[in-house]
Amino acid sequence: MKIVNQVNRLRTKENITQEEFARALGVTRQTIIAIEKGNYTPSVLLALKIAEYFHLNVESIFQIEK
Image (cartoon, rainbow, N blue to C red; front, side, top):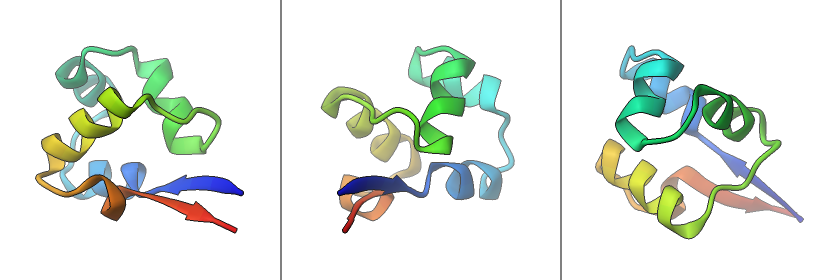
């Protein structure tokens, strides 16, 4: 199983840079890059912060791909 996410799509829709998004979440730009590429699965806390930022629930951003 693999975790897929909508972070890149949501971030670009909001027209914010990876740097701005990283700063808002208190992480590095490299973390955002890794999440968007699917190379890093964020902690529950970070996933909740991302969901809160976009005013969505976690499940609408992160899904399990079988």
